[in-house]
Length: 297
Image (tube, rainbow, N blue to C red):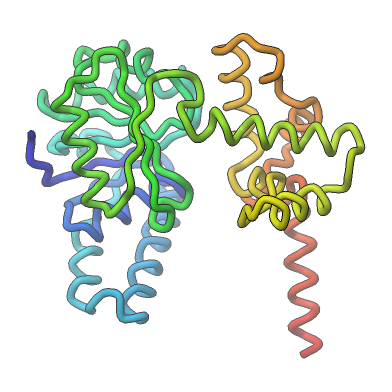
């Protein structure tokens, strides 16, 4: 099993930033790549703030926190990932875009490097065919947010080698995560179950079964979920939920996986959830109400 010293992460969004944070705080040198300099700035600020909070709470010493931040380098040049032992992509959930990236990484990465995808639903086997190293391509699906959530879902493609699997599993366990393993089917384990539930919650709202608040409260208090399905969809991103439902529908070919028209309508309107300030719920309004309450205190 290959020794891992350096990790590359492609994508400076919430997932990529969290994955880079995990690597840096667990003793790996990390290159975090994004083509958008503003995204890299936000990522670095997020990681710095998170590490400082760990230090202030006594979870890390000042020296350990400084070491973690020293290990992190942000770059807009994909060539900087050439020395990485493992490269994890966390970009947009589009098979076409991911395949293009994997083809580029295959040309840049050293011959022994593992290429891992954080995809939550796209076929690892198909992504691997964009490379000449199909045995070294694997799915490594982190849950959101990566530093907090305890699970990593590992997905083997048709040609993923035992060595690639064992190295990836050992890396996930070094992060302190629990590992589950899925075969390469649409949605894998978590989203094969979760997304149809979220989609059904949209159908319940769409057909007037109940209000959004009652749907979420019913699932929180009736099934002990920490977050209602519509609130969770806003947190994930409605565009991501729609993309996964389309993959399930196309890949499994059953009408029960057809995306709810209301979910499609929200995405078409640009109401993508918390990241846009409005989704099923209006987070801009919530923020204003909280500000008004604070002003009255």
